Image (cartoon, rainbow, N blue to C red):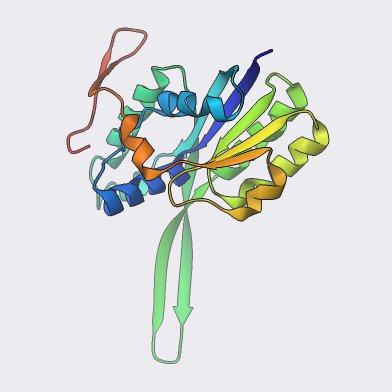
Amino acid sequence: MSTSVCFLIDGFNLYHAVRETRSKTGADCRWLDIRSLCESRLYLIHPMARIAQIHYFSALAHHLEKSRPGTVTRHTRYLDAISASGIITHLGVFKPKDIRYHSPTCDVHLRRHEEKETDVAIASAIVEAAATRECSAVALVSGDTDLVPALQTAHRIHPGLKRYCFFPPYRSNRAFNACTDGHFKIAPTQLPRHRLPDTVVNADGRTIAKPVGW
C-alpha cells in the first residue's frame, strides 16, 4: 500500500538556507525545482511513497523594492515557475513594525517589516491534513520550531498520520525529534541537483525564464 504524502514548504526558511548555501559553497540554487527536491526525498518516507500535494508558503517583499528593484518581479516569476509543476502557492504579507530606542543621549526610530500569516498558514495546513485524512503523511520542509505545536496537535487529532521533517541546509533543530516519525537533513550538496531548467513552460504554453543573475 502506497503512502500519500503532503509536502508543506516553508518558503522563507528554505530561501535563507539557499542563500547561506550560496554564501558557503558558491552554488546558486534560487531557481530551485521544489517538486524534484520533494520527489528525491520520498524514499526516506516509504518505498511506495507518492506525492499527494505540495504546498509552498511565502510572501512578497514589496518593502524591498526601493533598495532592491525587481525583488517582487523575480519572486513572482519563481512562484509562476514552480506553480507550472502543480505546486500550490500560498502568500502571506509583510507588515511594518515601528521600533523606538530611547536613551538620555539619543532617540532612534526604526521601521522593520515582519512576515505575517505564513507560519499560521503552514500550521493550519498541518492540522487540516490530520482532520481531513486526505493523506497518510505530512512532510514539513522547514527548521522553524514555531511549527512544532501544530505537529503535536496533528498527532492528537489523528495519531495514524505520519509526520516527517526535512531540514533545509543549516536549519536542523532537535525540537522536532519528539514530534515526528522521521527527520532528515537536506545537505547543501543536494540542492544543485534540483535546479529548474532555465525556461519553464506552464500549462497555457507561456514560457517563464529564470531571472538574470540566478
